[in-house]
Image (cartoon, rainbow, N blue to C red; front, top):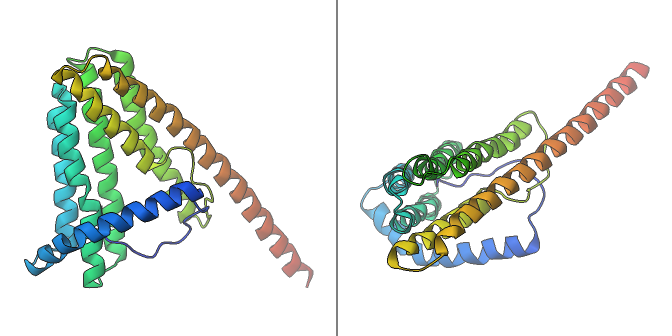
Length: 241
């Protein structure tokens, strides 16, 4: 959720399939949401306001519905507010206000929203869901998602490209978790056996996040060693002159 800004050190190019899906999906929703974004601009609403309201909606949907086991309606609410991620960016482009602040706010509040989603699932399993293992898996998904994001941001902050995307990034974590939670919620409407989709999805996200974390740590270690070696070679060359 937030305004776009030119970024540096984006890392390796995504796979062709992922890039094409992202390209065409964003193009479609951009066309659909552009009139709504323009309407909000005419009403004097700022992109930052949309970002904040979108995050508040996601947090409310996750922490109100999920702990009660209302996965279907919780996912509906979360999904509606997740679209603010495209609306505020669209507004920023129309206004020509792409900024570092917008990118910072966007990234920060994304972490808040992610934490609320997996925190809400953890609360369910710690309470009425009565499954300590899945509660722990949900907490691991929450923590590992934050650390995966941190490794890339920290690597880029020390001047490394962190040229790896990883197996399961934020988009994949959210899609897998929200789709599974939404379908699992249909169990309350009489669909048998579908509630098991959510535990399976959480395990997939947990394992995928761990693999992604290892991929990024290994990449940063390699890039750091290469950068240090290049710096030493440069110093040696200068000393020899």
